[in-house]
Length: 223
Image 1 (cartoon, rainbow, N blue to C red):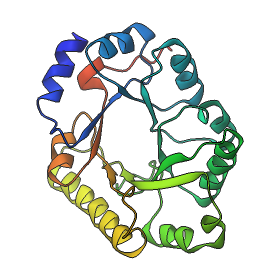
Image 2 (tube, one colour; image 1 turned 90 degrees about the horizontal axis):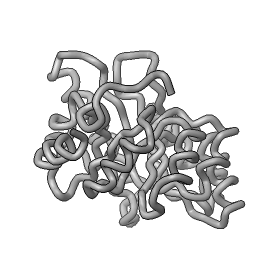
Image 3 (cartoon, helix red, strand yellow; image 1 turned 180 degrees about the vertical axis):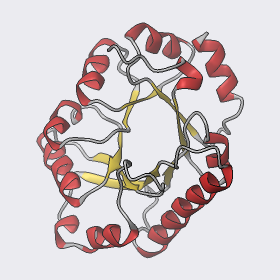
């Protein structure tokens, strides 16, 4: 079923948009099945689970960390993580930089913005992002690279609200690109859209979509 689901989702995702298979809580055989079907980009939201899966699975997988990242867990993923989507504070960015330096790596990161009306979601606002990017401490970070933005829309059936929230993230991306990353080719990613709303996100400019249940089925909470 996973291969079949993947093919259905792939048919709806343009070639210029990266499909991240959100594999959190899913067992190794499920990821292996997706891998065997050609999927190479996987998203996890727990550092230890991601580390354990990385150890078991093929090494050409691109691992994206998409959850709220605790500073004391960065060390577990710093040696191999491809992209951290969820940078929501200057202190977290500094902590990632510190662990990346220990591994002699530059870790790609996205700035996470709070675009939803739900208070439970994490993220910066534009003023906080400007303060971060204009700070002296940011200018001294040599082991991270900001590659774009990430956001999560409100969980609602109101597609107009979801669309407007995605539009707001695209506006934030455009502002940051123009004012802080104009000559930086690496700053090009807009990570938005999940299983229920990724088609709208693609219409509004997403370059990465994070799709889990449409590929793997409902979450397994027992793991």
